[in-house]
Image (cartoon, rainbow over all chains, first blue to last red):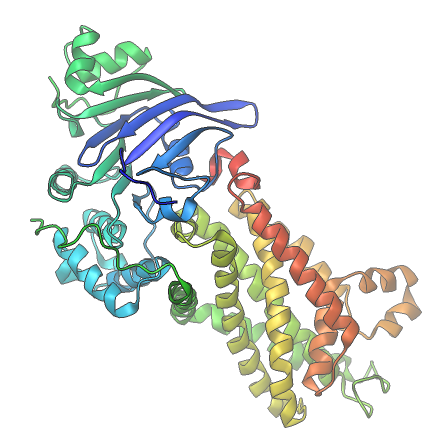
Length: 257
Length: 283
């Protein structure tokens, strides 16, 4: 079912999901265009990881629809999944194996031959400045390098949508800045749509699109600047705190003033 | 820091046709093998466990337990010879359960999610993972058979070949069972319970250690339990195959159980109907 003119990289429409009686997502809608960096802002337990699980089809929602470049993840899961690259919150590379072995495994999961996989892997590693570590064991890498390896792995099959679930958690300030900058460059250079889940305000620029998710519901959507203006707050942290009525972030840095 | 974008962003080198399926399967099996090589302790444990049973347990019972002539054996056999097929099945049982342990572990660390992110159908991904596990169990079984040969476990040479398809099928059955359980185990800690409540009862209440007629003599109830235990048929399928014979009843039961267990596992991992969608911890 090839679509004529793919519109948004990601289009989530009226999605609900329950865990038993508990409502994890309630009528969530959002979209990410190609070449757009979209921050999904929410506290722990807001429903960010559940939304990621639904987009990546770990499980399906009962209501609503999720489309990747026009392909519905429920009706056309294969077509949708081959267009997505994901960096999960927890570490998903195998520490016993080398970076290249991890990359080759991922390439195979996408039906890429081992020779083509190696070329693509090196290309992806170069783009995150990790080519020199290709044959190092993952457990020998620093936390920031592991994250970059995971980003490279997510890019190996040339997806159009990159999902990152709190990718900078547990990293030092330098590594965190490196990774944010690298992903922003991917957005610019590759026309990649990026959905970046976070609760760290300083990773968000004023021109970025922001979706605020709280207790499973979308409270606000728009550029960081307009959200701040609409709520008459001093900055995004204040706007976020005002909306969610709780402690904002565990990080007070804010680039969106 | 980031080089130019790929030359052709619209063209994908990925293949999702039959060649793609083969590469995907190859990649999953290759990774299982790599993990196995890196976990030497696991290989050693898998080998030592049945050897302890063979060298110590069987040696002690040798004089107590006589095994009369029952098919497929054509003469009186030593107790070691009798329990060897059961120990082979035990190797596969442990391997299947350990794969399931790694599934639970994988899911918690996210490796399972990486696997399920592949665009290939989920049943195919799970089957590939099982095939990888079966391949590893074959290595363990043949290593055991090689050592056991020096302990007077000397099946006919052709038996080493005819047992192979039986091992593949039984490995698939026990792996499917492990897979099914991995989808319902909520926490890693619960696996100890699985050991106690699944592995040991399955092994003991079967024909692995004693012939069923002996069970019948001591307890009719136990005999019936053994008759309804699929592990009995796994053991018998392997026992007959090791001597170049076919046990059709065992084959039918093992094949049937494989189909049922695998179908249930695929259902459990189904995105919309499966159990994983009902638990927040799954992500």
